Length: 183
Ligand SMILES: [Zn+2]
Image 1 (cartoon, rainbow, N blue to C red):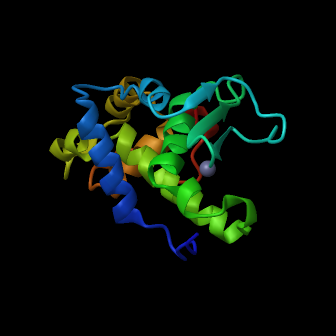
Image 2: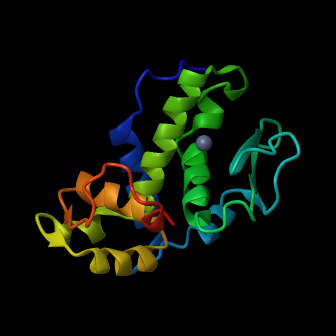
């Protein structure tokens, strides 16, 4: 077992996300995250009794080398694709194999969750699709169309676009996203 890195391995998470994306030969959005997850894990659309508060939880059986992903299916309506990609990130970044996740503290779990979120963003919104928009300023209605096409939330898409040099015309100046845009 290795020590959890102190900071999220951003480049590593992005590299793995892009390799998985390329290997799937996905031509257009949305990325079929659920189908890809089924290829690497047993997927259960119900909450694990030991983790009732989690959106999703991934368990690894060291004897069978088998992953089981439990998704809190009703609770995560509206963010299922993200939750699925997040759990995929934990698996494909090797978190359950490289680290003893049962003994990690909150700071260490935070780093691994951050890595899984970076994976999710770059897997669901691959740079190859975003790159042509770099340097542009997009209207909110255009971004809304993209959001529906990609099957991600406003927040996830806008943060990702701005991180990748695409500007979004937002009608608000408050850094807190209005709840009407947070779906
Ligand atoms: Zn997580």
